Length: 136
Image (tube, rainbow, N blue to C red; front, top):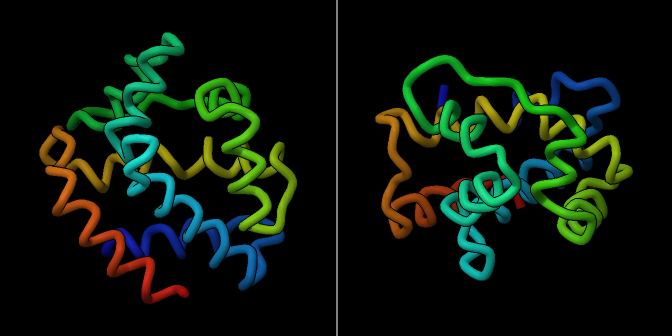
C-alpha cells in the first residue's frame, strides 16, 4: 500500500470521516510535510525534539516499533495556529484534528522513512506534490 492509500485509508476509517473531511485532512497533512517554510518533515522532527519528544518521533523515523503520541502532545508540538489552519482545511475542530493526527501520524511518518532516515527533501516533496494533485 502506498503512502497516498495509507493516508486516505486512515482518514476514511475514522468516525465521521466524510469525503470532504478526508480530502482536507489528507491534503493538510501532506502540505504540512512538504511546506518549505516550516521545514517539511525535517522541521516536524525538529519541533518534536524541541518540545522534548525526540524519542517519540525518532521511533517513527527509525525501523523499530512506533511509540504512541497523545493529542495533547500533538497540540504542544504543532501549536494552535498550525492546528487551527489544518482543522479549517479538514472542516473539523482543532481538538478532533489533534486526536486524529495522534492516531495516524506515527504510521505515516514511519512509511515515509522506511530506511530509518528522512528522505532528501526534493524527492519527498516531488512524491507528495504528485499525491496532493491526485486528491485536489
